[in-house]
Amino acid sequence: MLLELFITLLLIHSQVLGDTSSSEEDENVSNEHEDDHKKSSSHSDHWDYHNQRSWLSAFTDCGGKSQSPIDIVTREVTYDPRLPAIKLDGYDLSGHPELTLQNNGHTLQLQLPNTMRIVKGFDQVYLAAQLHFHWGNTEVPGSEHTIDNVHFPAEIHVVHYNSKYASIKEAASKPDGLAVLGAFIGIGLHENENYEKILSVIKDVSTEESDTKITSFNVRHLLPDSLEKFYRYTGSLTTPPCYQSVNWTMFNDTITVSRKQLAALEETLKAGHNQRLSQNFRTPQNLYGRQVLASFLTSHTANAGGSSETNTFSRTRATGTQDGLTRGDILAIAFGVLFALTLLFFSMYAYRQRQKHSKSNPDSRQNVIYKPATKEDV
Ligand SMILES: *[C@@H]1O[C@H](CO)[C@@H](O)[C@H](O)[C@H]1NC(C)=O
Ligand SMILES: *[C@@H]1O[C@H](CO)[C@@H](O)[C@H](O)[C@H]1NC(C)=O
Ligand SMILES: *[C@@H]1O[C@H](CO)[C@@H](O)[C@H](O)[C@H]1NC(C)=O
Ligand SMILES: [Zn+2]
Image (cartoon, rainbow, N blue to C red; front, side, top):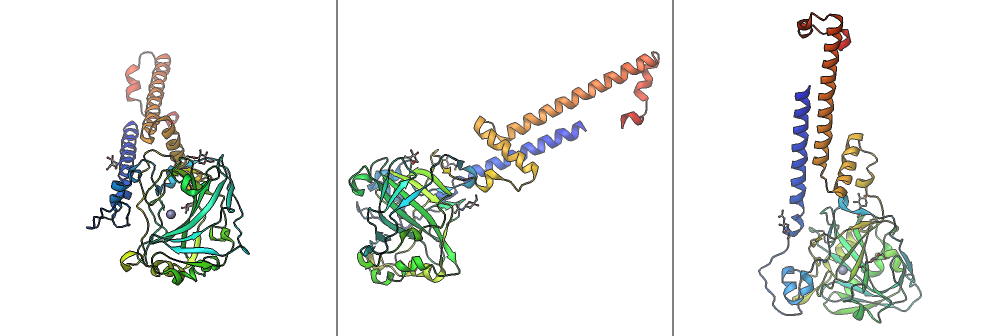
């Protein structure tokens, strides 16, 4: 039995070690698929998505340690119940003057009036400036942020600036300058009427640096139904000059548009040199120890449905992370204690058996050794 215990202990420990090393390898996967085309654009303020590594030679912030986007690892986010709920105001623009929609060569952008505001959720009120999109093509999903290394087809960013600054231009480089609300866009069965307000006129801005006017509408409807669950982290603009001035919010609830609507976004716009404007997403950036907070319990932290063994393991792991102990350490200690207790129990048992027999039959010490198991021993 002792041998069995020992073997179990060894097996479990090596399993845990194997697990740990494979998750360490996973950390760098996101850096590997960076586009590295032969093009080496050395112009100072001209940039494109083909050669993202070259951004940092002209824009030093792009090589900083608080860059965006990031991969959100759901089992590593920190649940923070004190994150204040987000409250928007003035997002319903129906009846307001027309809005300007623009193809700026990097994205499709809608100018927003600063009467649209985030009134609760941050230390200050943040005023809207513009919203825009990131997308891929029919083969490549093009969200900027990823969830557990998975891209969504597209992503919307609503950019706001701190009301203590006079303009977005002034705020953009300040540490508390910007708040971006982001959401993932997936494919659904039905046409999204709200997105159609923008996508129905996308042909009018197919050439680079063109713009058009569109009828105002309720911009709240471009965001997910629920704004309750979100991730929060400190990051940057995802395009040059990559200022590290953004308090990021990525919503857990997602938006869906029809396949046809997504195709319109992916296939209509042209960038410079008459090239198609697509795959305008930046590779996820290294976290460098930044914490990603969540306003909600992810399925991993909650873990309500798992077997009791799985629950014990993940609880042990969570505690272990805080105390600087790994799951392997804790298991080793637990099995060590169990091993010691078993040993103690056996020696006590043997000692008492010996005493019992020496009392009842002081001359038959040898008999104890050869005594076959009786009912008491079972
Ligand atoms: C992961 O990337 C970081 C920074 O890019 C590097 O320091 C580290 O050695 C890499 N780790 C592995 C396991 O490749
Ligand atoms: C981001 O917003 C949260 C919530 O208001 C706040 O606690 C945090 O300090 C902000 N971070 C930065 C870098 O401004
Ligand atoms: C939303 O949260 C659930 C539960 O944790 C998770 O499984 C899912 O991947 C999340 N989706 C996004 C887009 O964050
Ligand atoms: Zn963006």
